[in-house]
Image 1: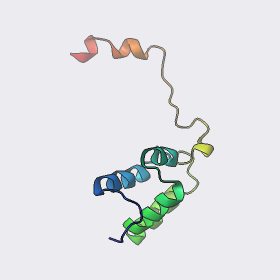
Image 2 (image 1 turned 30 degrees about the horizontal axis):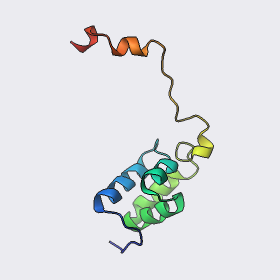
Image 3 (image 1 turned 90 degrees about the vertical axis):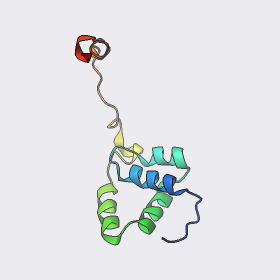
Image 4 (image 1 turned 60 degrees about the vertical axis):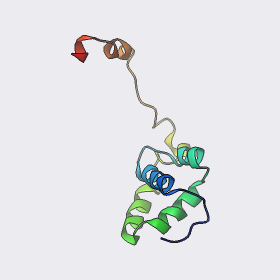
Length: 95
């Protein structure tokens, strides 16, 4: 493993890589949690992934609307029915 200029524990680094792989986790959420902008996340991924994994991840993430908040325009928001609460608190469904 290459030395890093950013002070991240092994657990934090594992979590950061996991979040970067997730399709629905935007780079803004990673920046909010770890304080690292997208460019630094990309560099860290390049340092810690195998070359083939890096190319696969980069091709997958590049231009993906769910990873970039500016491109998503509400893609991350999910529909919730007005009846959801009544279904959630239904005792019959919890037997």
